[in-house]
Length: 212
Image (cartoon, rainbow, N blue to C red; front, side, top):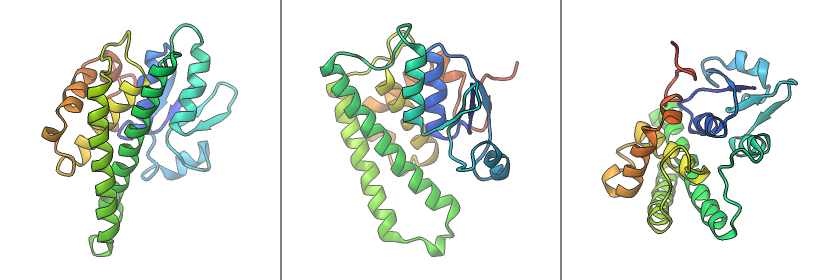
C-alpha cells in the first residue's frame, strides 16, 4: 500500500501512526495538495490527503474510512478500537472531539496561510476559534474522565487521534490554544510523541520511514 500526503497534515499523520500500530506495511509518498497539486492529481483527481493506494490500484480517501479499512486488514492481530460497548462509546466521543478540534484548527490555519489578511472575514474567524476552544475544552475533560493509554501495546485510536491533533494545533496555532490551559492533553501528547510509531512519522514535510 502507498500512503499519499504530507505528515504536516494531522489526517495523514493519524493514518501513518495507526498503520504502524496495526502492523501493516506501507510506503509513504510525501506530496502536497498545494505545491505538488498536479502530481497529486495524477494519483487522485480529487487531490485529497490522505489518499491510500491499494495494491490493486484502488484509491481510498478520508482518514476515518482508510482506518476502518486498515482495521479489517489487521483482523484479529491488533485493533485500535475496543469491542466493549462502554469503552467504544467513550472512544467515539474522544475521537469525535479530536476530529472537531482538528477540522477547526485546519480551518484557522488555512485562513492564515491562504487568504490575504485584508480579505479575512473576522466573524468567521471568531466563530471557528470559539469552536476549536470548545472542542479542546471538552477533550480535556474527556481525557480526565477517561484516561488514555500512552504506550505502543495498548494505545487506541482515541489516543492516536488526540495526540496527533494536539501536536498539529500546537505546531501551527499555539497562541490560539495555549498549552497551559490543557495540561492533561499537553502531558498525554508529550508521552505519545516519544513512542517509536510517532517518532517514525514526525509532523512536517518528511517521509516515513526516516531516511537512513
